[in-house]
Image 1 (cartoon, rainbow, N blue to C red):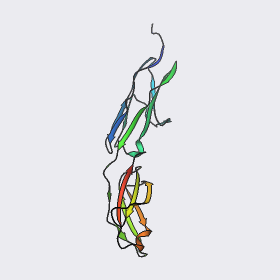
Image 2 (tube, one colour):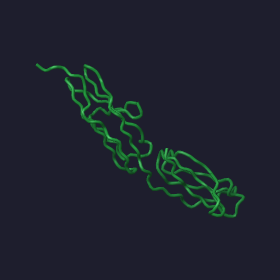
Image 3 (tube, rainbow, N blue to C red):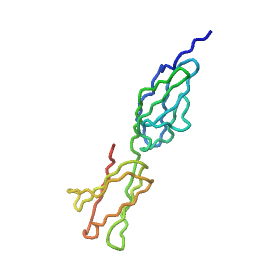
Image 4 (cartoon, rainbow, N blue to C red):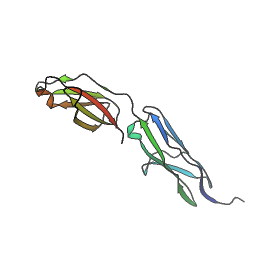
Length: 164
């Protein structure tokens, strides 16, 4: 005779820091009778189709960063794992050469990472820097217009990745 047992987590998922574009794999070890089922969550929201003891986040990007947990259930109850944090190190980025526009402003193209937070500063002398714009990239290439360029003989730009 087999005695029914509620789910018990024997090994917790582990936090990870990985380079952008690589895979992250989380795993949980659990027992129970009847055998438990699994539902992975990111930031408290269930991930569709993520119902195995192992979860792989393929080619992770900034948008995949967060807190991952798994709810382990059977007929006798459920238990939630400890949170495992996924941190994605920024991918390389580049700021393409500025393109002059007919009104004297300049358009910049930042080729970066979807979901990453960037801040752009501007200078006329490479010593004193001023804030131009901060944004979260919603595409691989983000276009930025510097309307202040029309009144300056030269402008320099720098990009900072903001970790949030």
